[in-house]
Each structure stands twice: as C-alpha cells, then as structure tokens.
Image (cartoon, rainbow, N blue to C red):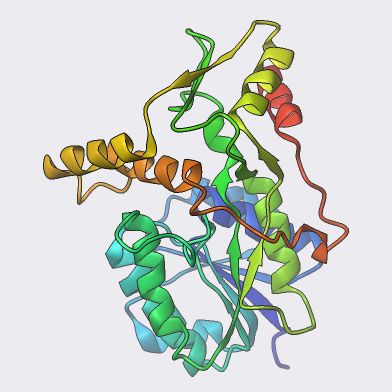
Length: 301
C-alpha cells in the first residue's frame, strides 16, 4: 500500500520550522519533518507528539534525500544561515525536490521585499536573491512568502526597544510605515499556501501589522503604562556609512553581526523593503496579530 501524500518541512527543528509543521498538522496535512542527523530529540518532541514524522537526513546526500521527498505535495524550506545554508544546502534541497517530482517548493525567504532592495544593501537578502537565480531555472512551481520583519524580535532584549530608557530606536523618520509579522502568523499562512490545491503566485506578501515608530511607542506605552518615546539614531545615509565602517572590522562569518541588523533597519526605514500590496486576505481563516496585542501577550509571560 502506498504512503499518503505529505508536506515536507526542512529545518523543522528550528523555531519557524516547528511552527510551520504544527500549523500544517492543524490543517490536516500529513507532515514529514526533515532535520539534521544527530538533532537532539528534545528539539523535536513536540512535533512527534503532534503526529509529525521526524526524519533525520543529510541534505548533501542526494539519493537518500530524494527518496525521502518522493510523494511530497510541497517542500517548505525554513533553513536559516549564511551562503552554505541559504544557497548551497537549499539548492541541494531544491534539486532533490525536482528529482522527486515534488509539485511545489516554498523557499526560506521570510523577509523584507528583496525584489525591491538594492543589491549589496543587505547581505542576507542578497543570499536569497542569489538562490532565486537558481530557483527560477529549476522548473518547479514555487511561492516565496515575504513577511517583513518578525514581530517576535521586538520582545525581550530587542535592539529596537529599550525598556530601561523607555525608548524606541529609529533612523530617518518616525512616520515611515514598517511591516511586521509574528512567527506564528507567518507559519499559519505558509501552511495555507503549502496545502492550497490551486496554483499560487511566485510572491505573496503579508504583514500582521503595518506600523510607524510612533505607533510602536504608543503600543508600548499602552501596555506598560509608562511613556515610551522615539529615539533618533541618525539618517539613512549615516547608517549606510556606519554599516561600511563596522563591516570593515569583520563579522562576515557571523549569521547576525551588528551591522547586519543595521542593514535591515536601513532597508526598512528607507522604504526600500516595504511590502506592497499585501496578500493578507488570500486565506480568510488566517488571523492577524496586532502589535499592541502581541506586546500585551508577551508582557504577561
């Protein structure tokens, strides 16, 4: 008897990967989680408890990887890293998906709109752009999900929000609109795309909330009961200069050096990475989290 069709999630031991796999289960999909060999079982316990098949696999082992993907209706990549991951390992995953005749591939983009940003302005977006040059030639149907910044990065020890000083850092203008999406909302939307029986566009753009720095400061003020104020960190031009200086001193082998975060800020506050138009309404059952509600929920934890 043949196995039922399934959705494969690569990088499923990571934060976003786990959320995508669990969101797929909620949609009734059979899910195969692809994880690195020797992954600590504690990192996949929640997946196994949810009925997900956890499969250790070496992405560089093409024959075995291809075998694991035979029967998949979609491959979702949530791989994260530098060139050896976003390009090399993801190309190996793509090639195996094509060889296994998987109908649809969702790459690990989950970012600002890199189709509009200037090449060289953001290293991590450049890696995604480089992967897409291969993706477009692969012949597989693919859909990239662009979600702006992860809202989750604004809680805890956030580089943007200083809870001791009660300030919200920004560059250029406080009125520039910024796109943020929670990881949970991103995962829910990704699961909807992966299980969609109809063809999907090459690019889908989503945001849980689109806000200005003034909006973020007001949301924090409402939640904390203490006034938060915007804190100016310079212009777009001065930020670009600072990035070049900091990059000169290293960090190329780090996944997220300080200058990489500044590149994201420059892309967002210049408006270059702005998502427009949004495709939030494509799946009406996906509910979106407003930033004040998100702050409030995480303040309770």
